[in-house]
Image (tube, rainbow, N blue to C red; front, side, top):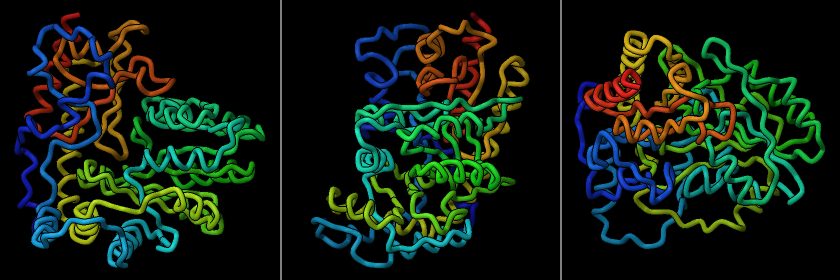
Length: 401
């Protein structure tokens, strides 16, 4: 199938589908009773917050799910045949020259459920977990859930580019109570795809201090055209202390299928994880993931072309209308990390402001643990028409302040 067969301009109505983007923002972005009355009624809010796409999934995946439904039984299912892990193994080898031992693969209902379990398996109650900030909030939630202390190392931002503070990280992981680092590559929310040099530096520091590393690589396939992704574990083939988390959910808009790949090379930890995991999967999730990795390359290429265009549009419009906003097109993800601090006081709730004044649902910096004041995260995985309307509202709300 050629890339011309995919229509990313199609606006799809998700009303009545139980979509979290439309129905889940109360209780997550705001208190459930928050007064959101403002310039737009809630029925006209534009969702640009939760990290799923407004695009139809690849027809190759739909076809595989339809074919599976021709069999009339949908009973308890598991990844019992080698065809799925082999398809995922081939995907990683061809895209990243990353050799996965399929014997190290286990599964999860998502990277975050796996993360919550793994923190509990790895850390004792008096130990600590390191993350870099700003951070996807569920890294903090996972530490809180397991009652372990969170240690943060702020990323250093220069001209919109974020880098890790290796000396700060080295100082913090030298604490013998710090036993785990949770790392996002490519990074959410900034979109950095870390270089081999940075990954080697971080890995060597953590491993020398006897830390286990969980590398959340869920955004790895969503690269800009001129960027390269390197799996962290690829650089440390002799180590069994790097856990890799990947999934088709972000890449192929399959988040609702609740299925992720977790690569645990340490035999003892993998057994502990498996002993505490019910290996029953949605039968449609298995076939959808396999079709994605076996047949989804063409759709993904078309998707990343479209995303590149959306990012370039955002960059041009911000430069034109909000010249004091700071934005660098990310290496990966479909999430834009925009610094609008020039236009706001440091204590302003940006999530609430844009809901009430622009009718746009987005995530403000206070939702990313630390080191994110004055920033907003926008989901650009939407038709251009939706992006234009959302951005026009955002710009107008700022200029009218």
